[in-house]
Image 1 (cartoon, rainbow, N blue to C red):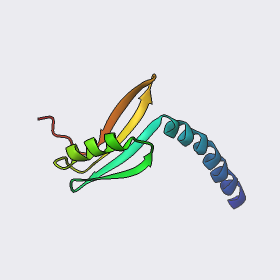
Image 2: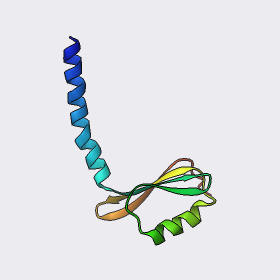
Image 3: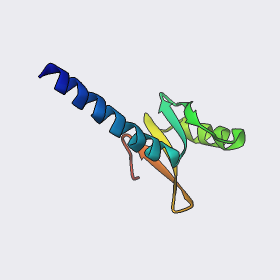
Image 4: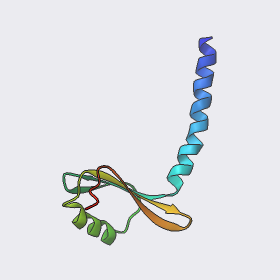
Length: 85
């Protein structure tokens, strides 16, 4: 019985890897804002764009910025607290 559970866990892991790969394939870059500082996590971003976002992030709340490609168009997603005002 324990061997069957091990095989099922390995099968679930093998099925999850392509799904995660497909999700990350559309990501252009991921940035983190923490205490007004911008940190690069992964992906590729032009330095000039990073510098401009860093200027804006000085007054931003802590969050994660994820740039993705959606139907060929760039999309920026912010994960964290947002103030619509």
